[in-house]
Image (cartoon, rainbow over all chains, first blue to last red; front, top):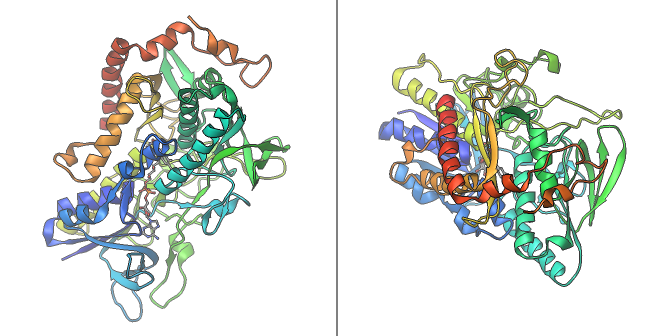
Length: 489
Length: 54
Ligand SMILES: Cc1cc2nc3c(=O)[nH]c(=O)nc-3n(C[C@H](O)[C@H](O)[C@H](O)COP(=O)(O)OP(=O)(O)OC[C@H]3O[C@@H](n4cnc5c(N)ncnc54)[C@H](O)[C@@H]3O)c2cc1C
């Protein structure tokens, strides 16, 4: 009997674990180690953050789902990996620390034959003074990155609405809280939901909305922007985004590295080296992401973290980490199998794998401060990669160690993104976008780097309906309800 | 019909060089019949991208 251990039960890890359990059956064991008792459909946190959904609507208990799937669920966080075992244990193992009520703090070594690291991001609020610290989110801004954060964001948002109703003007500042953030799409969606809710509450004229981000142009989204087919043109996402911001009367600051957050004020440095300050009454700033800080040890106890993980804490996989300058980047730099180059039975998927380099062109201010988006790994790629990795491991367990690995390169993969504004069936709208491929391939698609037959975007009710359907479909799928395998990632 | 979006443009400001939707484009976004057609079209397009990605 082989044992597959999956670290992280988020979008990517949950997909990998549930498919692996289905494909392996009861002859082999799948273990999931994840610190939360609940699964969270993170994209819908945006609606929680404006009071349109409750935490209960975007989360569900993992234990019954894993029991149904025959998965051994350990509510714990991984601390370290011993890919060669140790002097006491011959097999590779992970050291975990329980978070389960009643067992908090207890540690255990869990042996594995195959390991998937799907631990997602550490929300690195501590990277910007005032944005937070090692314990997480600070007191001056809000976040929608977790369901609990989003509940808190909505409480603060409702207070602002009440103030506006009493005649007090409010300033909203939404965007990224550091020069090296990713996930601009989430902040983008949040600012337009805020705008929509302010209209609905009849207080839009009492509010000033401003976007602040590390993108060098509006609509970069961490993917170097995209050209989409619209009315016979290949239109840049810059035009698309600027048009939407103008229509909704939202001002913007771009190319910004937020270097300090204080009560009601952020300080920032721009790409041109100038410094600025922006005041706010309400601010949601996405933190930069890092790996969750797993350690790795060799058999003799030597620290081999730097061999297994990149300096940002994400796990090294089959990517080309030595591509160098932007001019040398190729689509082929991006990993295909997500296998760790040193230990062949270890894989990483979703946000946990170390990308070879950003997708957006790296930039820095004349003061040497790097200011550019880091690459996003959104839900669809995270799910597809999780499934491909599970497939590879299942094949190796069932067919033998030489079974070929499945590939899922982000340079050959598209993504569908729907950014909603509002939640009502007929009063909301959404920007629905697809991008193909996520990582531009300028050799295959000269000029834009993407296939404009499959890269498009439009605003309207239709996208909004799709967003609603996706919410229910993905929660249905994650709960492993009837027909779950038919729902694509 | 309103040209509200145009009124948000500030001469030589951040948004001076962008395009804004006219009243007809805005109307289409919430026109249920048109959006139902777009719903089908966007779904097909997304499914094609999903298929190409697996
Ligand atoms: C507000 C917001 C909105 C978004 N909206 C969209 C959207 O509309 N569309 C889209 O495609 N994407 C969206 N995304 C991105 C999407 O949520 C991510 O791409 C996706 O969650 C990544 O999946 P993952 O499994 O890599 O990470 P996660 O889903 O974050 O899962 C990681 C898991 O690992 C666990 N973990 C952490 N540390 C450890 C440890 N030490 N040991 C074990 N487990 C650990 C975590 O608790 C978590 O369960 C959004 C993101 C945010 C923040």
